[in-house]
Image (cartoon, rainbow, N blue to C red; front, top):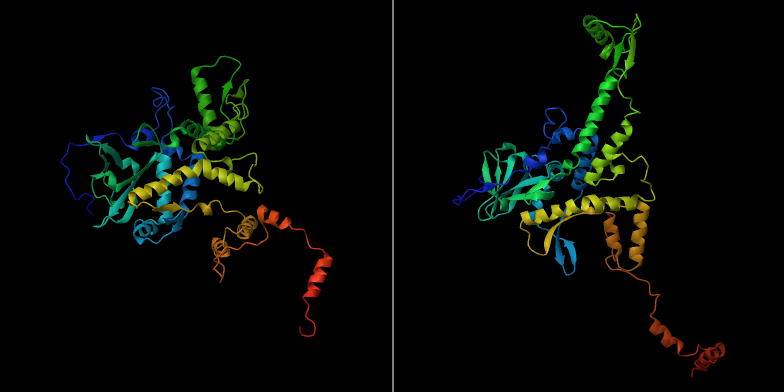
Length: 429
């Protein structure tokens, strides 16, 4: 395919750096830390920490499972509209991804790299026919002297880019995280969680080595008297060969006052569990994910009584902003007219339990502001005849009408009897 149908003769744009130059490689905490083996883990290594993986997978999965509707404003309300020109590419964005996989890749790129670049493929009428989530490491934003924005994309045959090409911003959807240094470079939450994630990986690696040694820490052999270097090296080699690694736990016989003493700090002294819990909590805090969503809540705060409030809080604090950004990016990329747009259906995320849902429908229908067929449609049930009109019982009266009624005295029983008797016909008269 040909991405650019015109030749640009202006001065070459200036690169402002890609997302990989800042967010992809987490800087070392101090000069020389990397050479000393004290550097911060890379983005790929941090993903090996279970808390980082759980947060990224939870957010991306919860957003991608929601349906995307095309709506049109009619009066003061938004209603579903049919627009195959806009909805068609979302059903099958490209040959190797469906809608859920596409949206999940969109969110994962943003959560890990801080930037999502979506290449739009259009036909001669500028209708979008395909969409590809690009590798953020292969994209560099460019700014021309005139202020126009371009994107330099390296070759990526899987995503429809046979060679390096410079693409105008109108053909790229650029969704990004917070931009503290440049408006075109987003930063991922993993930058803030890098220290906690690195510490979590180190704790797990240390535990792996410890348990790989049959849960026996390292130590020293001490003798009561002076020994030569040759004897010390021989004892060290013999001890490591016969009683270390897979041979840990074998019976050792020593003499001449030799004594083995452990020198490794115990898990209790190091507060291993507390440190690992703090690392998980810090990662979850950076991604705004509640602990119960990643199975790390020790207090058991999620109960049947408060699940609705917790889910609403999770949506408001964690998912609402990326969902709104997804809708706006799609509107801009598809060049949607005013009064129309894409809408992510969050009802699947905030769905109540059946008993509470049925009770809410009953109150809405009984209150007269929801038609029976609307409640049935919410439960995926077919409409019934006569159910398209809201109903309300006539049992409430205005205070003015009651005041007018009370101006006249209530009729007595004698008056009612005489009145009915006078109106009773006699002898046909």
